[in-house]
Image (cartoon, rainbow, N blue to C red; front, side):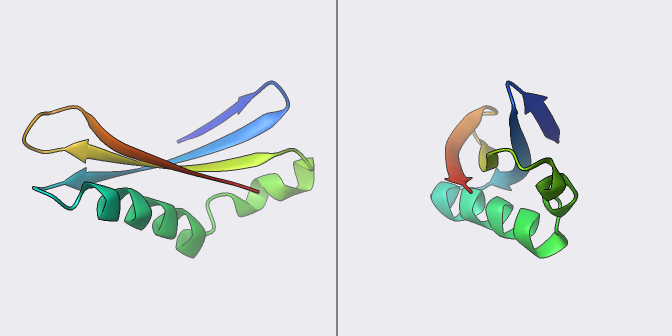
Length: 71
């Protein structure tokens, strides 16, 4: 999912986390954004870009561990 807001680009990736691997799942989501090049087409905008990896808890059914990398 991509959100363009306030002169910034936010690229979100989501992963389902099982057990204690929440931080790993958030980092895997960031890795997938990078590997698949999801943010690449927005670089021509020359705006700050934020990659947001979100782990969703399979057990609790909610947001578990977000991680943000800004470029």
